[in-house]
Length: 65
Image 1 (cartoon, rainbow, N blue to C red):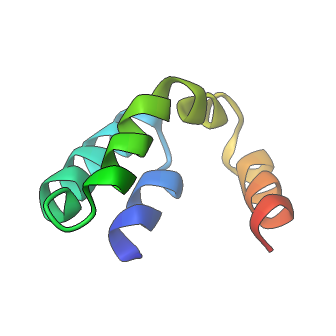
Image 2 (image 1 turned 45 degrees about the vertical axis):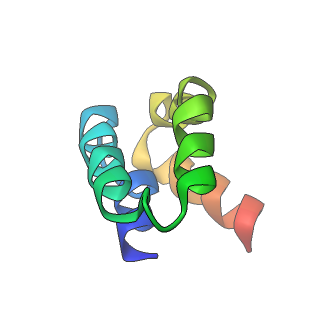
Image 3 (image 1 turned 180 degrees about the vertical axis):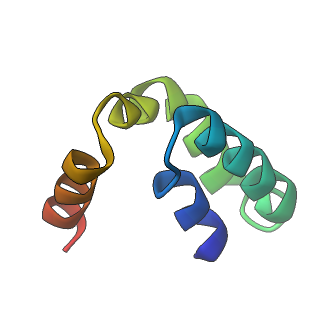
């Protein structure tokens, strides 16, 4: 979970993409479908980073809690 949080809690899209690469390297072998899904949907998922961190926090808390 910590590796995944590195992606969606990143402060910039560039940091999120680096963390996605780390997530891929650490977990692809064990969870290939999950990593494939993140990669396939990254163009849509990364739209999240067009908002500032306060708005992203609200979006995340609303959607997942």
